[in-house]
Each structure stands twice: as structure tokens, then as C-alpha cells.
Length: 159
Ligand code: MG
Image (tube, rainbow, N blue to C red; front, top):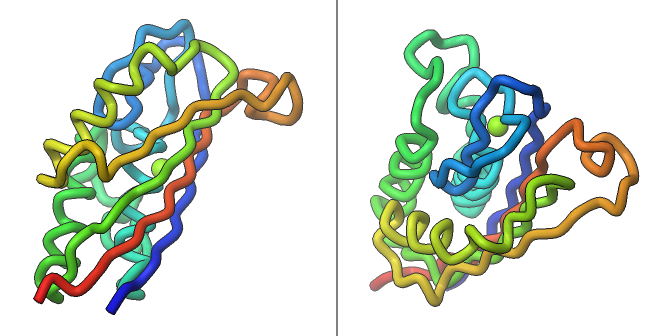
């Protein structure tokens, strides 16, 4: 039996914040604003995992009003989500994802991001796709005001 999950996320970009995507710090003039470390990719993947088994969303599990999650490493959220999925005897078949940001170019960091997500989820890197694109100067993302991420996940019964 297979199930599918979809997640997305967007964070505002401001000077003076760090830009962390897929757990990898990326040198950038502007970073992402958020309650936790504002890792849009890990948030999208976490939401996709929770969605695959209709377990709610990232906000219902890790409220952005809870001081406990202030500046939190988003890998904590992702690990918690995969534990819930494995507790139901499901395993990830594959993940496809897209990061959309105008600057900086993400391509040089893609392999490191895939490796890091692979380490957090304990699945092989060839099951994880991360793509990067821009919004061609259009809308808030395209004007450099935000970073966006989307992820789709297929999970299958592991026994
Ligand atoms: Mg978020």
C-alpha cells in the first residue's frame, strides 16, 4: 500500500538572518525569518510526511507560539515526523522537492542538502530529489523577499 504527501512553506527573507535550507547553512546576504531556524525545505518535507498519513500539519505538532521551538533546528521536526510514519509501519519510497529563491544560487549546495536530508531521515540519498529554481523576478519570491519550498513524498508499507 502506498500513500502520498504534499507540503509547502514560505519564509520572508531579511538582512541579518541566516539562510538554512535542508539543514545546510548557505552564505547569503539575506536569511529567512521565522520562529525556528526557518528552514523552508525541512518544513515542507515535514508537512508532506505528516500529510501522507493525515497526521495534521507542522504547526499543529510544533506551534510557532511555543518558546520551546524558538530558533529550533528543524531537523528535530523532521525526525519526529519520520518516527510517526515508521510507527505506522511505513517507509519513504522517494521525495521530490523544489526550493524557489531568487538569490543566492542553490545549485552548488544541492548535493550537500540531499546528503543532509538523507542523514536525518536515514534513507539513501538516491531517494531524495532537490531541485532549485527562481521566480524570474516575479512576485515576492522573485523580488527577493521570500524563500519557498515544496515537497511531495511517496511512502509505502514496510511490511
Ligand atoms: Mg516554515
